[in-house]
Length: 552
Picture 1 (cartoon, rainbow, N blue to C red):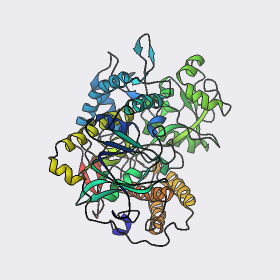
Picture 2: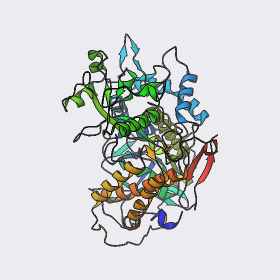
Picture 3: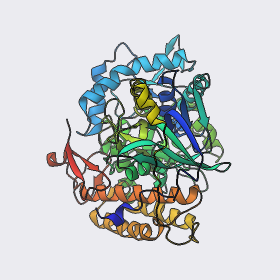
Picture 4: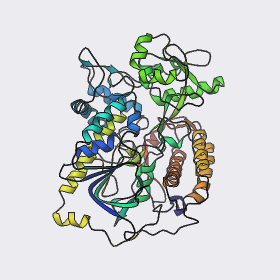
């Protein structure tokens, strides 16, 4: 890739002599489940700083509905959960990673319970749901369809008891700071203090996904791939950027937020029907509504085209109404706001961008390819999800890799000789110049570019892709990059747009390069899955071409 593609190394000009400094042992960027679990794993003798651009109640983890997948039922087996994950992942999962995470799951569930998480139970035992791609009931859930909210409540409460933890809310991370090919912390910004350099002995990236790159998305505002862009500019490897998972059932009502309707609704027996009320999933897959998400999303897209209708419908009218309202109170409340009865009416749904499977390459401890930088959660590519994430494996990954990254960062710092620890806290005699192009704030209509980008990604880099559509998207994004990336903005809207453009361009390039259909990546012009493409596509700033990495 040429330098024009890469854009500037830093989004803003700054120098150590002109901004305040803060020092910490472990810096965690992101306050969701992965980030807070990492903080809880750091040795209490070390100082931990969590930087989050909103507050601890606003992460994507809060929005998770379905639950956490774990082998709890005596009739279930670890091998079953492993097999389901590998099947959904379509040949790109790392089997050793899957096996290790699945076996760690019951312990993480027990840990959450010990911290006060109130999972749903019946007759003294955990109530287990079933979702698409799972062969057994193994989804541990809370508050019916609000698992993320309850889990985060308990984890936040646990984290607030840490005397070594400082949380910086409403603080945007502009860039990772590197020196001598090592991550040394980050430059951050908030309205009260402006820019600050946070120097850290170890930095953990836990910033979440990139769903807001698409017009139709289940993700909260601001989830536009910031962490992936930070890692890219700093020189860390990213891989599998073509794999954006689209959730099949997103509430589709004009004027309403695109609320996810949990997979557990289909697990409870809901049917997908077309505009004429015909159930269609059995014609696409013998697992019907319980097929993996990539299969269901593509089927819905086909039916929408076939019926010339903007959506399909979820039908729960054949189920017990009391059970539906008790099991899914959150969704029932949202539907009621639009005059719909979840238990009786057909609910309009269509796919929406949900989970970014690709991201920053990490090993089994959460270490990235950039020394000093670790990562956990949706921002990463760990080898767990392959080409299609199995439902309810996401919170599990955040728990497991958050704990591992926090422990690894802690161990690294404690293993440093005292002299090295002191060196890590010295400000290097360097500055971070970049030439400004144009006025600092610019006169661009950022909202217009952002909306255009999201619409473009939905049309051309969505559930169904072709080389022609991808090339058209790339031409448009390259054009925006040429005049947006060189500018220096003064606040988060500009920096977020620059991050979105960089990540979108990587995603489009990766989707063009993978000339096959695999998992969530459906190429209508290459509909077959090819053994020759059982590879990761890995990207790194400064490399002219991506590297194809074999799956172990």
